[in-house]
Image 1 (cartoon, rainbow over the protein chains, first blue to last red):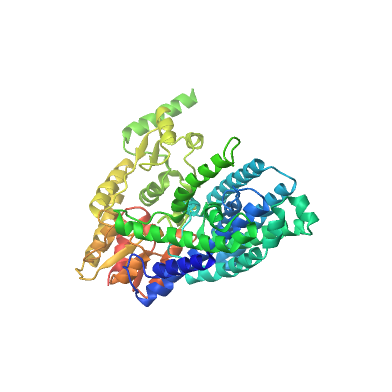
Image 2: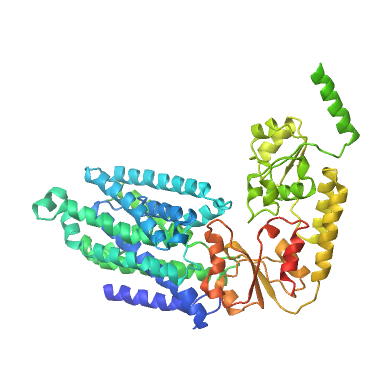
Length: 316
Length: 252
């Protein structure tokens, strides 16, 4: 399965480099290196981070609805990045952008895992996530309104809808480090997550360091999602959808889900970004649809399906 | 009694000069430009954007005038004879001001030099200073004639968020007045298309003073190889006689 997904990611990545408004095939080196490479690489990195974070959160929280976007971690990261960018911090010190995204994501994930740690039930955790999301979106709009930019409204809209078009190699370099580090941390959590799947008490009796596992999960998700959201804006539902699509194939064990979710997330976001790029070539569109809009169109019906299944009286 | 007599004298004075408004409040950036150029002595308050040099052509003058938001209470407290506004924003505020008997004039958004002439004459007449309007237009005409020189080069005006100004827009009027052959098609072609089919000249507004992702795009490394000319953004934020200065910038 992992080999199949890796091949899919590689194929989509290459297709991504060969597809665009300038036509199909190998483009001008300037287009290849400065426009398509940062975009394709960021799609793979951000998608992989979101997919893996979704799998880790669903395992750590024992909640099938957990997703960095749905729980507001992505929103907190976007808020941090907006403050750094629009208030001029990143103009003075470029790494302030991913660092502020990280800080926002860390606050969001620490709050949620702390909340979950006090034995919160599944639905109440999701409600807390909805509250964090709403608060992050409101603070983001407030930060932009207070920033010295008279076109704040248009900028808010674009941030919240997420996207990867016209990113530069600088964006890629800024985000890649924290994302790779975060994913590395998360991939090593398999055993702890398998223990947690049996409940915290059983996990502790099996020798799983429960509190430490949750802390590491929070830090890893913050690293992976925070830096990604800082350059891509609000891209939701990838972390929700990918583990659900893969579970019937790789099984229920959280540790078996981690690497496939990383690759699956990368493949999904590469495919969605490819779709956004191809849409104006096939349809009479003035511009590309936003990437965050496509993932939401894909993910929202999925969420309804899962919600029906986990609801009382449902099949699961 | 004294107040009544005073009010009567003011009314008579106003009736004697029906077009002249002694106290004018502007709630719109484009109206700010016109008001402070044509009749700064009549300006009681202008919009908060007027003092921003990246948006307004009268930023220096605006620092000496009070700033007001489109807030009905704040405007009423200024007791204006005339309120200048834009065509779209703050419609509920404007309706309230009109119900309270204030005279509200909505300015248009001229997108070519013929419309700029008509709008300048209309606003100058509203403010009772037609001669100043003609003086601004004479300067504009001189600049346009000096810059007029047919060229075969293709210029593209790239705006914030990667939009290209197309026919019918102010930016397109500026490119045509500067003599460029083809000013590109309206829309959002994307960086790739621009790099794959590069224009002879890329025209952009210079970077604003505030951080903006929308204009960060214009500094994308893939575009640095294209010949580029920047124009002060305030000259194109609103169409007016000052827009001819953008044409002068592009003259060879």
